[in-house]
Length: 373
Image (cartoon, rainbow, N blue to C red; front, side, top):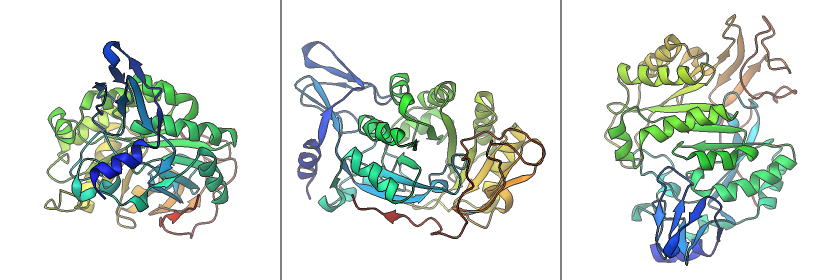
């Protein structure tokens, strides 16, 4: 497939956006992400999927490039209905161009010829079909992920609105490079906002195609708006793994709330960053130690299942009782009360918990189950 053919297919599956402002001379200003693109008629934003057609911002709607059921721990969310499955859907495109992206085939397909997907990836869908697929999977959660969900927020909101009517929880897996307008647009329909805090260096963020301050601002605002926030830092050797930078990240998160879970996860060579070594267990342990010393109540190490000891588990911050035992994406033991408290000391455990315990462990160890729509 050629880039022109792919754009032709995608442009046919769009609707008028809601996160934009119409200006003079048919210009539009997009507010879906912090780029705030000023788009001329016939031109596209940085993400390439939002475009100006005769003074109207057209945005993606009515398809998925992937949909699957898998554990919520894989997103990763550790404090949102642990042990449950989530129906995850994604589209195409991104507002960043990270050299270490692990979803580059979908995120970079409109920017990098080597990532150009086939027409077979794209499946027309309706919000009703996606909610019904979640119900068939017995998944009480729906997530927008795989590509950057901020640039397809109108589509996500239409799905989430129906999902909420069915009592489901809805979450984003995002780079957090957003605007107050977008977060307030999402808030009535969204429960969780997972943010990748990639670095504390403005120069590094610029290399990835974004900026640091809007990400920090979005973490603060999401928390203030009452969204459940979890933060992930992919610890990349030589990029963001110095103790000084990790301390800066941890202190920032504590300043927002010590109850924000911080996931420090292992890098594996991928996409355009294949020369850096994988993250060592010792490096993840050091990052986790820093988070705990800084005062964060919930610090986790990921991508190395069974190799990071208790850093996969959830402990009561008051009495240190182990409340959730995990291995990889499986919940092996669960002790949080239906009221969301520690059974040993009664302390409130921050998160979104179920009145029913999660199903017994043993499932798919994180392998996604593709769904038909």
